[in-house]
Image: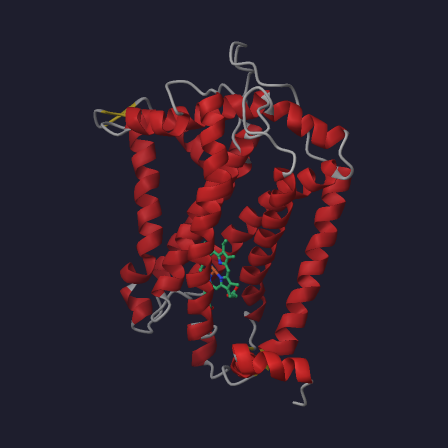
Length: 360
Ligand code: HEM
């Protein structure tokens, strides 16, 4: 390709030709599951929306129990387009977490974690944990009634764990109760620790994706349908771009027609409002804990539930190492069934969480 003098100047100093070669080499396999390759890129785009809107929110937000609510109120009412930025941040957070789940289950069901992509998967599971932690910590920041009490319930759950429970509670809350100290902690976690963790994991995740190229599902490989590919630059990237612009349009519509509410300022001395519910992505866990009997095999039901979710998380992390059949290139319907069972379980319990009355 013919390049101008600026390009040549930069190439001599930073090696643009190598980047260009890399971009030209990248190919995306074309088959009936190609659509799932767009989900990771969409998640990445939504994460960038979060970083951008989050930084803008920081211009006005104040992380203390005395000022947090008022600073958000000011942003929503007096700052030009402040309501839009806040609503975009809240909506994109929800859509991003939804996309992370879609990405996880699509790579699980297509067995994209087979060797040599085990670590791509593991860094992905950490990114899922980090995304959920972003949601949990961000929710408290406006310091409104709902967020305050949801955080009280959410942090109280870890306290039931034997040995480490009381310590974890104090670590999270910065004391025994949810106070301004909790808010300061959640703020630090939300704007410093989690972004750094995400950045590190994401760099590794994307490096590994780049190194190994896109995986081709076993079924497609067997049918000999792997030969067709599409250049990443510009064909796939332009399709990605259409998706991102459409996502931005959808987010703008959601933010404009359903702006995020602020509610009442949190009052730690007021009684908890009835029917406190967590964010939708925690609902299946919350609802599971409700259904567990008070004692299971001599242990408290909640403890069994929380340990159960811990084991499930560990299982998810280790899937590439447990699914030996997939690693050998054989079909592994057990893991397909486990994946499907997880999706159905999560959907069902989320549905029950929203339809059952608070006492059930
Ligand atoms: C912030 C969250 C995440 C971002 C931004 C992200 C981003 C991406 C991108 C851009 C790709 C390449 C395109 C694609 O395959 O869709 C990818 C691939 C991949 N991701 Fe993620 N990801 C995230 C979370 C996860 C999670 C939670 C998992 C699963 C536990 C995961 C597992 C994988 C795997 C196995 C691949 C390789 C797919 C293949 O080669 O076919 N990722 N990711």
